[in-house]
Length: 114
Length: 112
Image (spheres, rainbow over the protein chains, first blue to last red):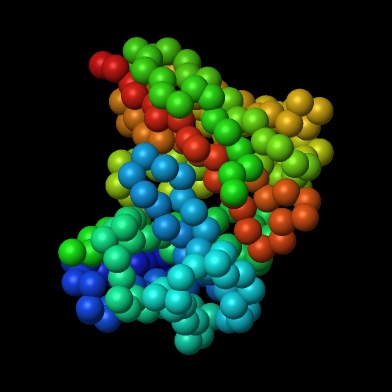
């Protein structure tokens, strides 16, 4: 298995909703990442987990809450989002945190906040 | 904050021609990577070049790195319609543990 699987592929949520994005990999990678990407822009790093511990939070608002239940799973919990949070959310993994062997990305979750 | 800047921002060429994209960055790096992204989908890792390497090949891809000029180029030879995508360079920076930073990207369109 050489994939990163993200679910759901599309999500529409209201500003008062609570939802979660899921990411799974079975490559034995020990670093996992959340990126946010707006249209025609590069991905922007949100969070980095290394060996299931949060190692980087790029000053992301608290309405985004990451969770790493085990080495294969990464969640992003969403609560009280704003319309400007609508974007493509990408999960990635790498063998180890320096990414020396490149990152494997999932196909993303297209999030729309209404 | 962005580390890499791709040039040009957009490029349209005829199928069969070669496409060249450039990336410039600001701080010292351990390695530089190139990724491809088809519209609205995840990124695909194309090639990684280390700071002590000057050139690397993978199929129709050729990447060069000039650390003195803090720049890299990606050459796609004999382009195909399927090469239509956005291409991003990504750098780690010697002091940037745990993460890579993406450039703005080049949107490549291959004309039939």
